[in-house]
Image (cartoon, rainbow, N blue to C red):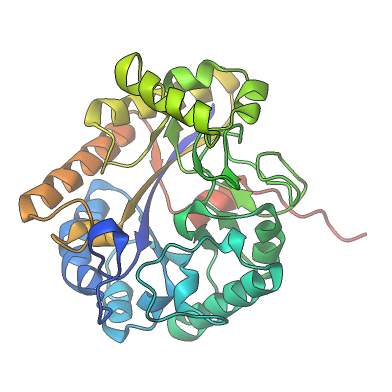
Length: 333
């Protein structure tokens, strides 16, 4: 009987402003004030086991770390790379966390990942097992780096979606897989498990994989046609499993689609929902300026999670899912 896991993941970051600009001086009020009461307590009461992916500025905030360490129930702390706030080449005056790690040189990316992991170990007192790249900007080469640092799971791939000309997951697997270090959209032989952020493909998923792979949304003509078709004819855009933008009916449809996928393939699936901690605090994110807006966002997210649990999904952290699904290393000869 295939299993369906449900992971509620939080990109845990400092307070932001319009267009995801960082508020200076850097503060993590959303983690200290809103996250424990408005989000975490409700998540645990529902039977969820959240995964908090911590960016470097959070790990350097003593009050934010204390708030996270004092949470009740079962949860996981992992890492989330915002390259602006970790050496080498850190920029503590950057307007926002816009950099993608795949755009650094391989050596700079490795040093940033190593320093972020070391900072986590120093502050939290244990090794992180789960990782997500900022802005989903991971590269195939990153997989070997994460394995070398002892990570069990990455959750940066978003099937059917694209974020930059060199960050496209149009034909990436939907089911958990071990990614190739040559091509993130292909399975490999490593030990690191990829748990993709869930995406409802809609009509876009009807396109054959080979067609999606050749689709170039950044070609000027294609981009123009894509925008007009989606606006005036039929919206083909895949929907990220993210309550800030996706309406509740589509979020519930995503749950149903993954459950049907498990039955059709006979394989275990993982529903991975994403959000940002700053979305819990009014005015600390680009989308919600009032308490009521934040509350509607949280209500939508938890109604979706409740529906998934009622349908038989198993609440788990990313690392717990990895323990169940990642390949077992072959014994030494």
